[in-house]
Amino acid sequence: MSAPENVDESLVDPSKLIINFLPPTVSSATLKDLFAPYGTVEDANVVCDRITKVSRGYGFVKFSTEESARRAVEMMDGKTIEGMGPEAKPLHVAISRPPKVEVNLFIGNLVATVKAEDLLNEFSRFGTIVEYNVPLDHTTGMNKGFGFVKFDSKTSAREAMEAFNGTVVETLSGTRPLIVRRAEANNGAHGRNNRFPVGMDRRRYHQQPRIVPYAPQPVTYEGICVFVYNIPHQMNENGLAELFRTYGNVLGARVMRNMNHLSKGFGFVNMSNMEEANNAIAGLNGRALIPDKPLQVSIKRQ
Image 1: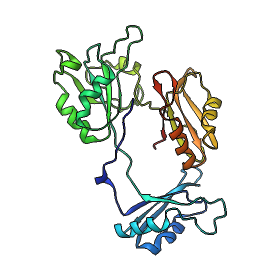
Image 2: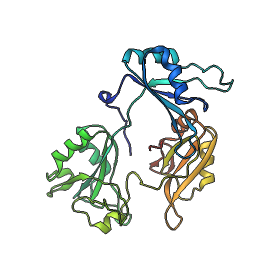
Image 3: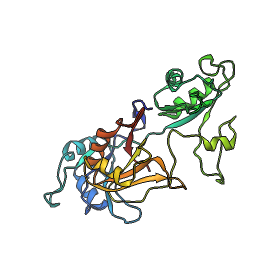
Image 4: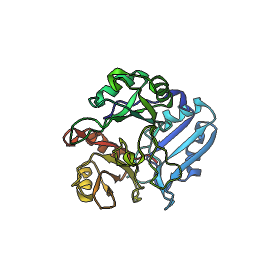
């Protein structure tokens, strides 16, 4: 389940711009020359694929002043670069915003009747929750004694831990103290940095579903990589690609599978450009292909 996200504006650098829809022939030096008329450019960088070294169609420009950045947005946003051919798209120029820092919390010692909405009701007082989940036992229909809450900031997560860890919250834990800890990523059974929530048996922990799956990196394709979660387990790569073709050109699709080659319920799709990727997100995010499990579709984070 998810809730609206927000961005901490205090972390935004108003003098740094992100430029989308750059033609593949634009280099970092060319990008700097394009924006130099609007002020002193401290740095300009076109983002390239780590393997092919080909431009990924976007870059960043850092000005010495906020005023120069604002002027560049006014003059360059929506402008088509001359000499790049009739198929060149208008640039999208905006203030660059940092990636969101989200913190996933493990909540233990839940009574068997607690539902995901109960976690939301109690924890939302500390800040914006972007995901929350209480895994259920398919045999009994009751929860498994724990759940997860993901906040959109470290501050909110820290305040929730300080308030609830070791505290008896009758609506959640009955007469027992809650266990609230940061949920660590699973680095594998033999990983050096494996850590587990307090009170959770190591073997049992590995058997439980996670809110956000941690998976090997997908095959690298050109274009924009989109992450899609809650796809039907019988859906293969062809079906996943067909689902996205309504919104643009699909360069590749991959369904993530376990060692037995069974679908994990999520995958990746590479669209030709950011516009098509955004169209797919707008059209598919929240659409339920599985009852009570809406698709979660977003740009893949590095």
